[in-house]
Length: 342
Ligand code: NAD
Ligand code: ZN
Figure (cartoon, rainbow, N blue to C red):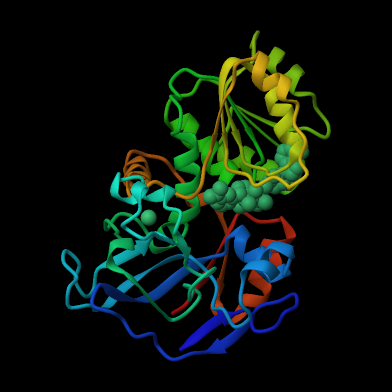
């Protein structure tokens, strides 16, 4: 079968030929129809420090996908051949304290599809049945292929009560824009999203993702708050840029007692002004992945109740044109990029 793999220890990704994976008693085999490119895949593509440390050369990458079950392990219950599915890319151990308490997303033994084991950029993916998420008929394959990052946005945005709150989102990457739309859908009052990238700011604006889209290289957040009639500060902050300047700007503009969720991954030497955290009595929560499977349930039901995520997919390519797809995603001039494996 065709796969996209990290075949050389240098910038790039290559088409590879691999045997169709065999499945165990508790696994299913999925025929992949659509995949999406994640920021993580771009780190692997660019072969940055994290990728060099983490990804073995030869690894088939990718973890955002939708497909159809074509084979089923003999112990698997509740799934059948022909089911349309997506799946959770974090494979957990099932026996640690957190797993047994139902907090699977905090499992210390988590293994990542397309990072630590064979990925979804392939014609077929073998995965534990427990990771499979069956799709309702009204969710398209394209949309299901971005459920993993949409789940990051949902997990982060629904960490705190949104109803009637003023929400700041730093970073209008695909996940930031999705989180802004979710905040509005969930009933926030003012949703403000920031970035410094014109393409992304325009996309957020076109999608109506926020009440106010702010280019922080040109406008002061303080002025925007005045314009919106906000006197004290943001009630909820969702950090989705991984940029230390953005994180500090968020902390400086939070209300006392405000709540902050961090999804963006800052550089190791990021310095923050702890005085803002302490004297404002802020709550800070780190977010990793998605809650299994409450996040998946919530994202499905929010889409079914009118959350429109289709416009975040800005580019579609056949997998044979993967080189162009990766270039577009790496350029920052895209929302989500979807690959067709048919
Ligand atoms: P992305 O890199 O596409 O988006 C980040 C955006 O932040 C970019 O548009 C960039 O222009 C913007 N930005 C840069 N400097 C800024 C500043 N000073 N102010 C405001 N915005 C600024 O990333 P994404 O795919 O949307 O993901 C968002 C973040 O979440 C990334 O840091 C990613 O690594 C991280 N992530 C974390 C998890 C997790 O489980 N914790 C999962 C997926 C992604
Ligand atoms: Zn575990």
